[in-house]
Length: 104
Image 1: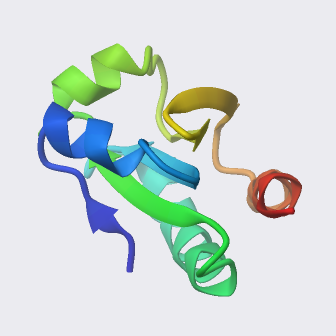
Image 2 (image 1 turned 135 degrees about the horizontal axis):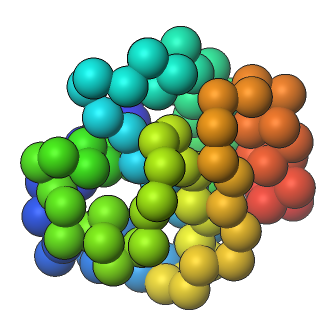
């Protein structure tokens, strides 16, 4: 189960090294709840290749603002601290492709 990043400092530490996918989500977001099990399954499938975290945009608005999140769910891919890709929406096939692309 991907860990929730509670503070902007947690966010900075999490994206610092390697390939990281962050799910920017909200408890009230229906599409976020629908895609969550798929994100968790991909996190297990790519364990050791991709680190996965979640940010609740209401609880950690500083990290969401810093990442320029405009819609939920937003999945951002970071490599060694820099944003390299993103996906908006709850499309499980696109999410799987995002993981496959960056796990290589």
